Image (cartoon, rainbow, N blue to C red; front, side):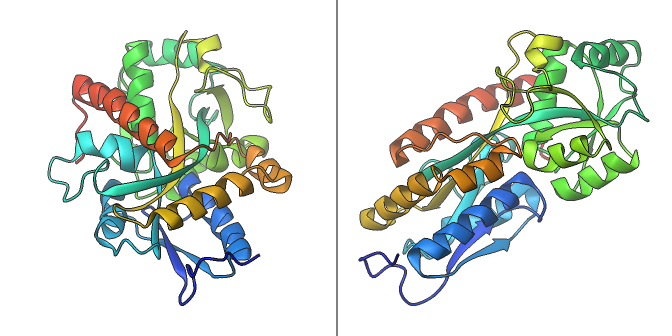
Length: 306
């Protein structure tokens, strides 16, 4: 059904994913772009512009015209973590962007290659790491990525040391985990659950306070090793600051409605995503609170971008 407003009427809408294909951000962006294209009668094209921890693609959107034709599939790393990692950003994740809609909250899953480290739960992993400081290698989609910061939170809370191996994207990192080139990671459900269900890697725990409804057999990390542990990823649409209110409202309403569709919910919930769509103001408040929380951890652990 085509909306009454003239937007988007004359050209496709670009949805910038500031990472390589295959990760949670890319999977969610493509699912939303497909439905927005169908509902608004104009193509929403996903463009992967990875590099520098997501800052390259994010900067593209910050500098784009605020006309609704360039959007960002932002997430915890690009909108909340990077301000503490990169001191020379040309944009501010609060003032340079207009939050539109929170799309999904995706709990991380702590997964290991059992051929590299044969442990059964988070407590076993912590015990192993304490006996062999720095021996275990964990991968992430890059320095400062959501997986990196989640593992920093895990290691800090457990008082252990592991060796970080950054990759240029979640997809290549998961390939190496399956191949046994690294021991473990903590990443979102969309890239983690398929190899878990195929028996290629082993899930030790979920990073949210609650178990996943679609994978209730996986305990939480809080249950099995670190009481109170909570480190989830989140994703949402944003645009350049100054977007017209009518476009913001139209996009938010469409996102909220689409995310309530049983077919889409079932498809993405099967990969670990949870949905709590709200207003642009709700999303802005989340970004602000998460910037404060993760910025404090990054400073405490002295995490460096490079």
